Length: 72
Image (cartoon, rainbow, N blue to C red):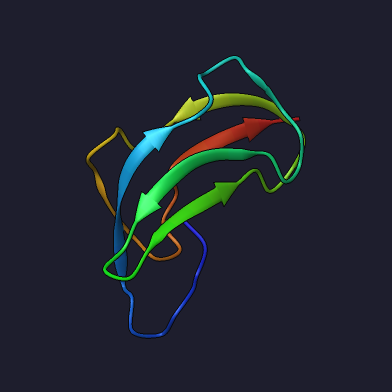
């Protein structure tokens, strides 16, 4: 989860838009996380294949926390 506003320390993962095994391009929206202030779209940091989903829908994720993995 990317770092954002200094007053937001965590968010709840509300939706995965990609599944394990799906091809992603850098910048594709792969998930949505809701914070106290907004729903944040999480973009793929690199192109490849979504290889892992580490946090399920409903999980509370700290800022900077890992939600999944991409294999190049």
